Length: 313
Ligand SMILES: *[C@@H]1O[C@H](CO)[C@@H](O)[C@H](O)[C@H]1NC(C)=O
Ligand SMILES: *[C@@H]1O[C@H](CO)[C@@H](O)[C@H](O)[C@H]1NC(C)=O
Ligand SMILES: *[C@@H]1O[C@H](CO)[C@@H](O)[C@H](O)[C@H]1NC(C)=O
Ligand SMILES: *[C@@H]1O[C@H](CO)[C@@H](O)[C@H](O)[C@H]1NC(C)=O
Ligand SMILES: *[C@@H]1O[C@H](CO)[C@@H](O)[C@H](O)[C@H]1NC(C)=O
Ligand SMILES: *[C@@H]1O[C@H](CO)[C@@H](O)[C@H](O)[C@H]1NC(C)=O
Ligand SMILES: *[C@@H]1O[C@H](CO)[C@@H](O)[C@H](O)[C@H]1NC(C)=O
Ligand SMILES: *[C@@H]1O[C@H](CO)[C@@H](O)[C@H](O)[C@H]1NC(C)=O
Ligand SMILES: [Zn+2]
Image (tube, rainbow, N blue to C red; front, side, top):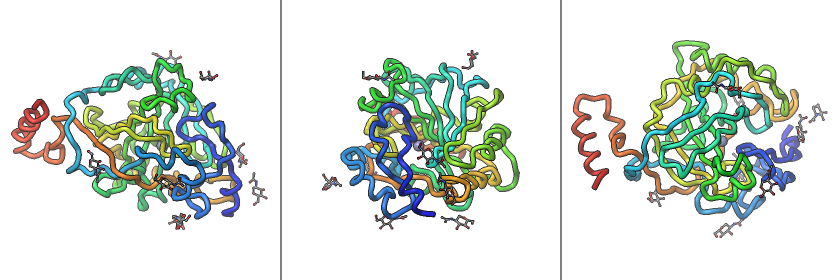
């Protein structure tokens, strides 16, 4: 049922709102006529810009920025922050109630947390993260979208500001020896059966927080670069933070995302919903985590001390 995607109008996945003035642009992930190779043409100029996302993070090319300190998360522990979950036809999106914020982490000001959504491949065996690390693509990627507090959640203004949005990216890796884990993800995934068809929404009951979903991630270790929305109209308005630790989710839960449909119940499964990587950018990270790959070994302390010194030079 490929025609359906061609006919479908763009939904502004990452920053829904008034900026999606041109709602008539048809774009898709998986058809030659509208896949990501066509976006620069069908939504020029932004998708043809010079700081496009996602990117492959080349760890040997990452430089240290001593300003990349810890974040402060407000209401990420609030179990009533999630509003509605929606099948947009391009992703699964969860709107957040007012009150969630992220600051610190060398962001220019506090940002309001607006929504989160996901990107995936085809089940737990065909990866579908957007960012890659040294060429490795993960199973899924979670994006929490935040806009500058001073812009009062006005996404038109946010996408017109080169740092108007702050996106937090988390890789999701499958775990095979358990099922239904962690409980927070089991709880979230349970809603998917209510939103199989495009435009269906379900109210999320109290009980899951953002902290619960970010289970196991050390949020002081991340990569930073300036990029764009990864969906049309690809506005270059995003301060990207990609966390190094992954969220471990059991394989059975990851597999459930492919039950969603891009249109109605008779149309295609929602698979491979990610943009391919774009040209590299300047990526920075913390001084203390430049040796993260060895941080669990006995000799890592010396290396970390060395990187601290270099970070200050
Ligand atoms: C994307 O579209 C281009 C042509 O527009 C085509 O060459 C390419 O094979 C397509 N890729 C996928 C994954 O469909
Ligand atoms: C994209 O930008 C490049 C470099 O400026 C240019 O050569 C190319 O024609 C542009 N493509 C589109 C579709 O605008
Ligand atoms: C949690 O979020 C709900 C919904 O926005 C809000 O009513 C409540 O006051 C928040 N709780 C706290 C402790 O901030
Ligand atoms: C996704 O995986 C399923 C089950 O393995 C397979 O039947 C289907 O063809 C795959 N879809 C794509 C687009 O690769
Ligand atoms: C966002 O800001 C623009 C420009 O100031 C304004 O025209 C628009 O009405 C605002 N949108 C909302 C939803 O407030
Ligand atoms: C849903 O699927 C049926 C059967 O393929 C089709 O006739 C109908 O037009 C579809 N509806 C939408 C909204 O795409
Ligand atoms: C979802 O909404 C969009 C925009 O209104 C519409 O084009 C599309 O057909 C809807 N999808 C279904 C399955 O009804
Ligand atoms: C390496 O970093 C430079 C700038 O710091 C950037 O221009 C270049 O694209 C990066 N290369 C890769 C392969 O990511
Ligand atoms: Zn995204």
